[in-house]
Image (cartoon, rainbow, N blue to C red):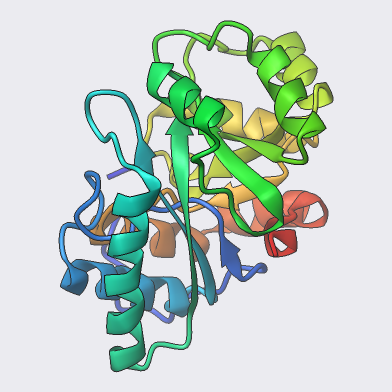
Length: 247
């Protein structure tokens, strides 16, 4: 459950200083995030409680596990947008994806069947075992074709450790860095949290994301937003965050 317990759930919700979540798994039934419309709506209500009113639906697209397509994602998106309308939730939804940079990604990228966010931002995920070979050439190719690559949760890739030069070289190559609020809350362990804090301290965080898969994640984030640590980290990172420029 991370460093911040769940006993304060009844306290007033704290608000984020931005209004766009660029990383979440709220689209129902397409990965191991929300499994049905009811769960999706609960998670969207949690987003609204935290001050988020624009949500990029970034479901997993990975070989063998979640081989989602433009069709499967847009179909689920259509169902969710209708449910949001019926529920009267004042939130804007956009369908995109979190692309694992594997063979399946290579085939979809070559075929031109990818779903970027507004502004041609595209969320990319490394394997948790090793960095993608040829990552910098891919960043360059994306940028030359008008896309803005976002590296999802760089703090979670244990092989980077505290290799500060590698973080710097990827950022200098043009990849935006998106850190998870759940990492700051301690949900992914001490090393991910320490790496996230180092990235903030060194001005390498461009975006924050919930990476919310379920309501337990929502509760953890809400509690973290009421903490002294968030008050400190939010002041350090506030001037660097570009979430609301995704449009």
